[in-house]
Amino acid sequence: MWRRLLLLVLLPLLAAAGGFGAGRWLAGGQAAQAAAQDGPGKVVALGKFAFQVYHPAAIRVFVTELQVTLRPGAAGAGLADGPGRARLVDRCYQLLFAAAETPAFQRGDVPAPQIAALLGAGLGRSFPGGLASVEVLSAVSSDQPRD
Image 1 (cartoon, rainbow, N blue to C red):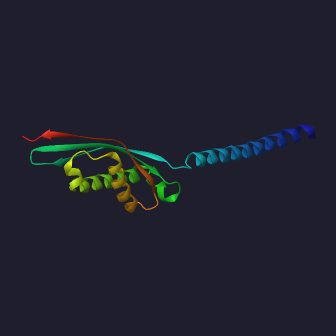
Image 2: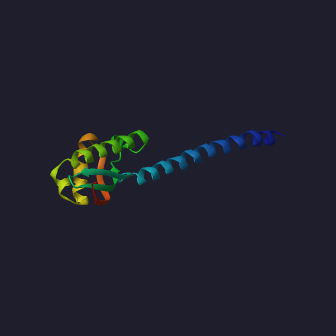
Image 3: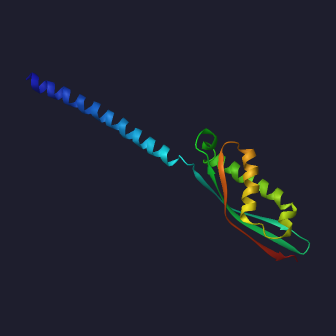
């Protein structure tokens, strides 16, 4: 009788303790795996940016596609979510609009490395310690005659 009572009480307690320990062990393994994936930095695609540069006889339309790599840690953590990503996109547009007024954008095609350097410098000042790199996936421009 005591053996049955002991089995009915002790067996569920041992199973509960084992399940709790296994759950903590499995969760710890998943956290370590997630940390290993975020180790080199998270890549955030910012999308395509289109802006116009007005000339007397034509309008040059620039379209560029950007992505940034965030540094792991606290500085880059808030930039991957909605509000942080919106701040990144807004700052990219501000930098591109300011650059459109410079002579480099007035002359013709602007190579992707030059756009990446411009954005990297500007975003680095705006988000210190948060960005590892800025990549320009594509950069094209076309001239449309003015009516």
